[in-house]
Amino acid sequence: MRIARVVVPVFLAGCLLGPVPHAAGQPLEGNPSRGAAVFGQCVACHSVDPGIHLTGPSLARVWGWRAGTVEGFTRYSEPLPAVVWDAATLDRWLEDPQTVVPQNLMTFTGLKDARQRADLIAYLKAVAAGQAPPTAAGGGMMAPARADLKTLGPERRVKAIRHCGDGYHVTTEDGRTIPFWNLTCASRRTRAGSARPEVGQC
Image (cartoon, rainbow, N blue to C red):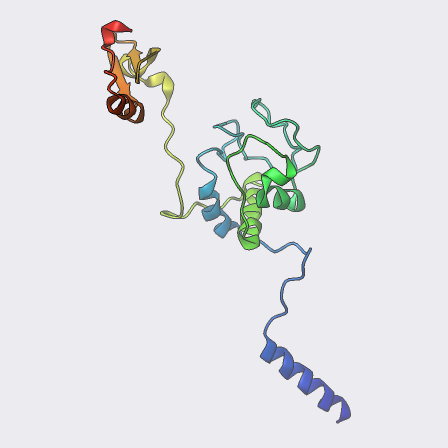
């Protein structure tokens, strides 16, 4: 009975205090499905299709891969750390890339939420294993559909781009020239009393 008197209060205290909080330094267990939604913040610059590079490299096989060595991608920041991407290294990078590599070229400022980082890392691990969950419809920014550039007609193939005054003039293969005006620059010129040059003047 003496043991019972000790165990019962400890058990009750555990119930009242709730679950033990996550200990600092121990990796969180991520959820790939939630991570697929978090990856919506990355799709503007990264794909998870092998060999499909956007502004940044494909992350299809980033798990277990040495930093800066994705085949076919050459626009890396210098110098990248000589590390292999795993839960710990990815967590540090995703939290604050500028701390890992000062003045790197990424515009991404980092994920400060440890749970989101763990979920994203779990998703990238699942992608590398070919077990990625589908991205939830409507969850975050979705990757735009990529057009097959080889099938575009001459009206959509750019032949030349010319800068003139406060605008750019894009000439397509069908001979048409389309102006794109820099409205901010045009507004400043108008306030300063400077007229926009005509196309023939450039």
